[in-house]
Each structure stands twice: as C-alpha cells, then as structure tokens.
Length: 227
Image (cartoon, rainbow, N blue to C red):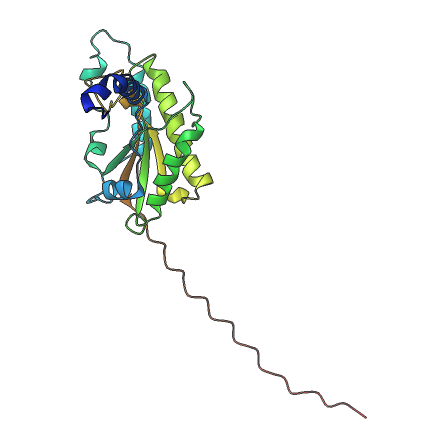
C-alpha cells in the first residue's frame, strides 16, 4: 500500500526537530577578513595629518590620571586624537590573553593577513599606525598602559614574524580615551586593534655617486740593471 506524505509526517517530525536544534546550537562563524578588504580600506589615503606621536602618548597618559568629579563619563569624553578619525582605518578583532599583550595563536592568521596587505603594491608606499584600545573597565591609567603594550605587540609581530619594515610601523595605545563605540563603553568592540594609514613612506635618498678614484701616480721608468 502506498504511503502518503501525510502518513510519513509523524515519523519525520522527530528527525526534523533534531536537525533544527543542531543548526540552532552550532556556533556562528566569524566573518573572515581578506587581504582585499584590508587593502580597500587602507588605500583611501589623501593627506597626512600633523601627528606628534610622543606628545599624543604623553597626553593620553596624563588624561588617564585625572581624578575629578567633573570628569565626564567614558561615553561623553571628547576623542583624544580626533585627527585619526578621518584617516583610512581597518579595525580587527585580535584575541589576547586576559589583561596581557600576549596574542592568542588563533589570531596570528589575522595578523598575517594584515602583513599580506601591507606588502601589496597598492599599500607599499604607505606607513601605518597601530592603535590599541581597551573597553572602559578597570583603571583608566592601567588601560592606557595595556593598550600601548598590545599595540606594540602587534607591531613587533608584523616586524619580526612577518618581516614588515619597522620604518613603516608605529604604535600608540589610547586606552579608553577614544572609544570605538562610545555608546557602549564596556562592549568588546572597544578592544579592537586599528590599523591606520598615516603617511607616505619616505623615499629612500638616492645614493651619492661614488667619489672619483684618485689619479694614479705617474709610472716611473724601469731601472736599468747594472751588469
């Protein structure tokens, strides 16, 4: 006797339900970044800002030490380096060990993609600033220190592991003084690392022409041997 679709339904329901539960419980895969994504974001460079990096680092450290009742909450603080907000930037989730600058192994692939982009022809003429951020948890002063150490760690991996010229890399940690999402000061997005195009790489000075060789002294007439 031929079974109809209706008669099969009761037997299929448990299997369909189990399959739907498996799909619902499967972890969502994070979107994988590509070299093309990074190049597209970082190559939109127009003009270099006037950026005094040592002064910015000092200013960030000093502001993080402020203890005042009149100090606005994190979501209302003015950006400490607004000039960086108008530059080409790529934000990336890098996983660190908690409260340390140690990059977890699963994030080395993302750093490698950044390195691949930096040696792509469209980005070779540029230098980059690696900016560390931290969400607004804990002490502000400690957050600035941690963000600087994390930015330094990414710079060092790019230079030492992936052989990007150190002349093209700078780093700064802004802590929680310039949140990536001020409306959510404690959100994980505020821990992202930013790669920012800041300038065109200085062209190597042409090597000076070699100095002319000194004139050879006049040859002396060979001496006659006496018999």
